[in-house]
Length: 297
Image (cartoon, rainbow, N blue to C red):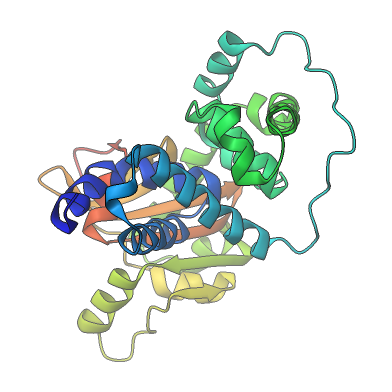
């Protein structure tokens, strides 16, 4: 396989890789970094020796994501000392139904899992990767990998966030935030943000903001923390934004002729916004599933 062929094959699989990385990491910008690192590692390998490119990409991406999750974790993950019985009523059909009904609260629950649990659940329950393939990534037996996914599944099933109809409330919070931004209501924006809110922007967004920034306006940085700092950046900046679902999670987009050009992903917990991500990289934006909810704006 030539380098040109390898590049084309990788780009054809990028949307799936981006979706997989996002669910493993919960961040579009980190997912973009993980996919890029996967490409770097792939391009340095012997392409002619790859029999199953899709499987190799999934394995490499999973290992990259696992490393990122572990470096993010402040405390060590627990190890499985014994195998627990699989809970009744969690066979393949039930797993599919569970995944189909998760909605926007899934990422909130995934953030509570240990890295290995999260990886096993995402790979198996969301992307149908067999446990025999997951086990080497985690350096566990297939039975232990199955138990990790089972443990994560029970957490997902019993978390109150999933039973609260939270997506509608999250959508209301995002809509209120966009309205406050359009109106230039700084105090309302701050009230809707968690005091420790985080704003993250990809490299393309930071570069575009540096070129178009008005004199005296605060600069857009890759990461800003604190409600006041985030509100100062976004007040008055949503006049053209449209409410949307980003990978089934309430957010906003800037679109031209119905095609998203910039994505604002919101992480809402309760009635406040904990995190906002701005993504403008064209390849990443194209890879995301976006449903615009305000087509008339």
